[in-house]
Amino acid sequence: MSDQLRDWDNQHVWHPFTPMSAYRDEQAPIISSAEGFHVFDTEGNRYLDGISALWCNVHGYQVPEIDQAISLQLQKVGHTTLLGMSTPTAIELARELVSITPAGLNHVFYSDAGATAVEAALKMVIQYHAQTSPHAPPRTKFVRMAEAYHGDTFGSISVGRVESFHKPFSDLLFDTISVPCPVAYRVPAGYDRESWLQACFDTVDRTFAEHHERIAAFVIEPIVQGAAGILVHAPGYLQHVRNVTAQYNIPLIADEVAVGFGKTGTLFACEQEHVLPDLLCLAKGITGGYLPLAATLATSEIHNAFLGAPAEGKTFYHGHTYTGNALGCAAALANLELIHKNNSVENARQIEEQIHSDFSTLRAHAHVGEIRQKGVMTGIELVLDREQKTPYPTSRRIGHEVTLACRKRGFIIRPLGNVIVLMPAIAMPLNLIRQLTAAVCEAIEEICGN
Ligand SMILES: *Cc1c(COP(=O)(O)O)cnc(C)c1O
Image (cartoon, rainbow, N blue to C red; front, side):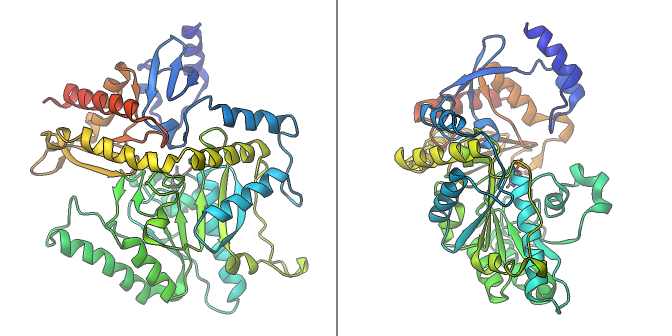
């Protein structure tokens, strides 16, 4: 049975972000069920999920409250449309999102993925500027972080850019202004840690002083850049970006697709620096990892620029068929209730401490360059040489090797290049976290040596 499935998988399924020829030789697990924080494959193996189903699972699998919310909704209606109509669940969830997110975000635009949430935000600001300043030169330049990741559609890769992923498309991407990440594991020649971080802050001021007339918005993953390798920004940076953007009256787009819903130890990352963004993108954890749903929240200032008689043409002509899917909204409501009831965000902070103490020995390992942490978001950067911070060559696929060594032990993780990533569900109990960290230490020793 599972051999047959594997054959069909190899023949017909094109897996995302997966080198398919290598995949065929790897006997990757085919997950057929899940319970608690474990998943089970067709061969009967059990794995602890160390990456929360790619950063979206919140309370584990087969969560009775979420299961029930979805099945109750299913007895009413699975999906209709939000184009010119509404549903009770979409309305209730919008109210809930407005009440729990940073103040001022009063309007919820639904879609179905992180990339579409970002795409909507980008188009909203462009159209907002066009409609509020019709006679000014167009504001079309986005400022974005170096190494940013915001999804895989054309707009979101334009404000992202990973050289190796985006090369074939480079002619088709719009121009952006990139500012350096305020992180200091490696600093450019001529700087020390302090002066480099200061230079990162100063670049924001300089960029806006120079280009503010053409800037549409600043797009940022607040506090932690996840897919860039769990880069934890220097304290105060987000606040600084907010101050500078506010000074020039330029919208700030916070992409909390990865960091939202408790992962950094607060419900939303922006809270950590008391920042109120103009647009907020949410996806991944919104349904507890059950169903595809996303939301772009906007201030009234932005939303109201789209009002007017239909003939004025100010409408936001953008949307997706499954926008605001009722099952997804029902799952999201149950997820949020559980986060609140179980104090899951507090658990995320305890996970951070647990992982920190479990890795006290690993931190000194000859091939561990740096361990970066914020809440449950954890990145272990493996290096060939600790003193020189020399990266392992890409061809060595060292992160992937460690992943396979973990899998053999019954743990699922997924690296970002040479960075081993742990992203447990924020509700995972600490005894399971200890099993996960022990397995990761063993796997790193097996692959990199002692
Ligand atoms: C995952 C991610 C996205 C894209 O979300 P999808 O649902 O995969 O489209 C966008 N932004 C950030 C910060 C992410 O981590």
